[in-house]
Length: 311
Image (cartoon, rainbow, N blue to C red; front, side, top):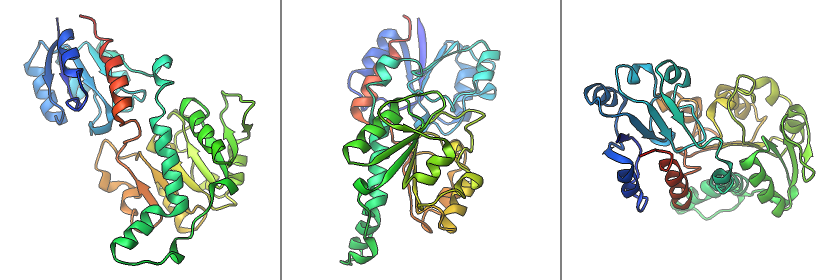
């Protein structure tokens, strides 16, 4: 029988604890820190599985935590794996299960694209800024005159599942759509190079995976090509942009805003992030990795993930 330590909150998901208990003994530690987890794994040799999710983890599951444990499986209710050191797990003989290839499931999860679209409208309409002004008893629209989406073009980086959702949402609003994706072809939207996308777009929305050739893909060199002072939306991974260069581009008015659900320092001290440091100086919106955190999406994904545990 499995002994599973769950390191992510699940109490808000109806019926999930019952399902866990049908798969084995459950140890529920939703706020556990890395040092405590290391101690528990070393002390309790019956724990053979970890159930996790990156959004609140705050550390990377690596050899330092996992060595000298009995863990054989790490099961993450996510498509992203940047909270797990895959090489360390492989060297320790630990199997990593994720939702990355479960297309039947993830094609039914639009939540992150919904957030990206909401962020875009927020920046275009100055919703947060004007709301904060009203909280100070001001009633003046002049500082907050926005832009209408129907008059703008959007460049989508990555036309996979989430990029496609973003493109469809944008099309309904009458936007002109460009996309950059070396591996996808679409008859519905116009494919362009990354350089051309940056030149043509009023909005740039990132929906890509972090790889060697995509890390820091939006950097000073590419941002110098902007012509329309675009806003940039990033709900994928912080490492897809050079955050120092994003601040440089905001300072030099090459882009007019940045909204993100992810930062590179997510698993370290977020106060060191250039984005967090400058959050009040420029037109920046940051949310704490809430893209997939909807009741419906979580329940669907978490149940699917738990079913991967064999009795």
